[in-house]
Structures are given as structure tokens and as C-alpha cells.
Image (cartoon, rainbow over all chains, first blue to last red; front, side, top):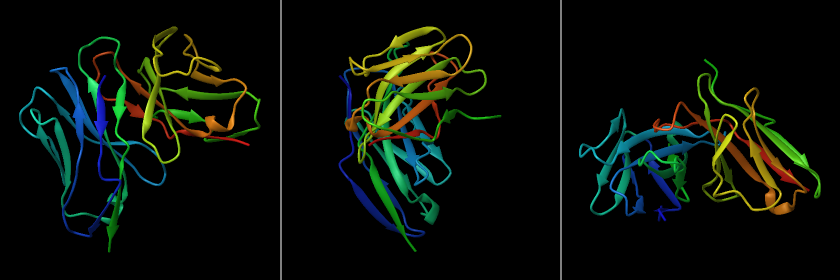
Length: 117
Length: 114
């Protein structure tokens, strides 16, 4: 069974600085998707960025980028130029890409990010 | 273009009552997923449905929980004889198809059992 681990329960960053959130996962599959979701105090789940495992190039979305290390099964999220609105719980998630019935997302336990003004 | 709708947003039930949570997927989406988030935890998959079919219910508790997604109308997550441990946020997500990698989440229903 696949598992997702986020070892940092809480992180803090100064406004305008850069922060990296860690995520590791375990799977025996070769093809899958990885995601970072943001959950602000409103509790709405917002997709931040996704990575297809077959792509070697790291995904980037504006100030958000990932460091995807497939061999190490590591998928970290880097937030550059942190803003107060980035304060939220961040979840790493895994999804199989086998096209079968296993469409479910498997989530880590989350990292609570605080942004200091 | 309306997103995923869930109602009610907050639901309070006494122990032993039934809870019904509703989810309307995004327009054009025929795949619905339910997740549960216990306090201080991440989201846990419960069930995956397509119209009139349960595809994967591996995360559903064996008793008291059921889900449906009828041909017409919203998807319903039903919890019978609720207990305090059912208190959680229940999220619904939808996607366009089996191979669609992106799931769009609703705002969640917070269930409190007193």
C-alpha cells in the first residue's frame, strides 16, 4: 500500500523569504501523480501544484515549485517570496496513474505553515 | 461556472441520529469522491462513485456508512446512528473522468455529534 509522510508538523517563514516543505512517499508503482494542496483557515482544499512521475522536469507554478526526486521518493514544495496569504496547512498527496479503479488520493498528515510579517 | 457544492456546511446531530451529507459535483463531472478529515489529521479516502455505481469503497467503515450517486441529483453520504467519533469534516471532490488526474474539492461539511 502507498503511504505519504510529511515529517514537519509546523514550519514558519518570514514574509518575502523562501521556505521548503518536505514530503516523502512509498510506492511500488512506476507511474503516479503527486500533488500539493493548500488548506487555509476556510478549510477549502486548493490545488497548488502537481507532478507527473514520468516527467523528469520539476513542476513550477509562479512562486511555487517542487523538487521531485523519484529514486529517493521525495517531493518537496518550495515557496518563494512568501506572502501572508500563503499561511495555511499544506498537504502532500499521491495518486496512482494505473487507470484502474484506484483513483483515490492518499494524503500526508500536513504541515502548518505560518508566515511572519 | 459553479464549483463543487456541499451542503450543509455545518451539521449538528445527537448520538444515534442520522446524518445526510450532500455533494453536487462540478458541471460535466461524473466522478465523485468522499474524504473524511478527523481533527488534527489529513484527509482519508472513503468512497469513489460514478453515476449509479460505487467504484471503490475501500475506505468506508463497514457499518453505519453508505454512499450513493443517483442518476439525477447530488451524491449522498449517509451516516446512521452517529457516534461522537464521527465528528469530522467531510469533503467531496469531483473529476471529469477516470483518467482525469485533478480532483476539485468542495468546501466540506463539518459534522458535530453531541
